[in-house]
Length: 304
Image 1 (cartoon, rainbow, N blue to C red):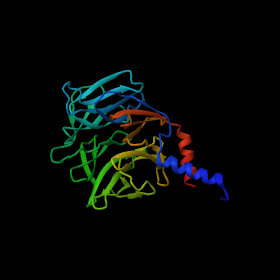
Image 2 (cartoon, one colour):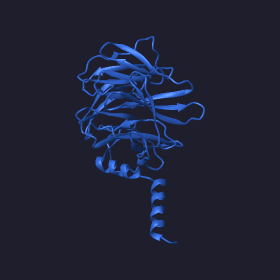
Image 3 (cartoon, rainbow, N blue to C red):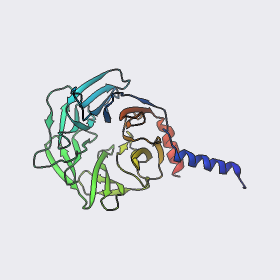
Image 4 (tube, rainbow, N blue to C red):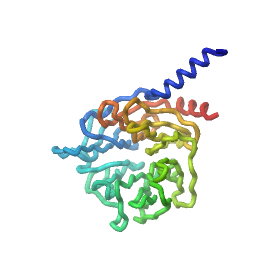
């Protein structure tokens, strides 16, 4: 062996990848023995809204909950089955999938009645995965035909901007400049998924390449638009990887053995990531404090 030190380093790198752990320390935020998931941050970073669900809910606890980022204060804000909440960037509303994933509704963060924003002639099935544009004027979602749609909250109009036959489309998030929507596009035959940027008018379509071959879904773009977190399927388990937003080699970010880690969401300042994990034996909300610049440097070095 000409360079035993290099050989040992390579073995160590492979071992880390095969049994990867969190890139940074994470802490558990919720402890209820039900299924909790899909965290979304308030624009000031002080609170997180998440969904809570149990098939045996006898106490009326299903729905959306708001919890402080230290876990000390919580409030039940929407009752009933509700999933995929997203806090509007201006802090005014929370949009979410309601009625077992058959409608999309919003609620004011000051309380009040729920409002259905999608007309009856547009069908939603298995959730629309709604996500806000950065200026809070538009909401991207998918309809029952897996078409990408844009709802304009100011004029109450809906445009169908993208559809590809033979695929399952899942909206992920908007780019920070509001010009594009990032989506996961799964081929029904090969079962492989790809990441695409679709312009808000549907005229431009660009594929983002270089991600892990088992990319599945769950896209979370960093607040400055430089890095993208995505979910990778490994049998019945899932991990979260991170890559340059324009494509390239990725790093394992939140990948723990024999557990599901999914639905990452960046805090507005980019210093924390909330996500769902089963590492405790239950679907709970976890928070990781991240060293933003360190990740950027590691990705830059890896992709040189």
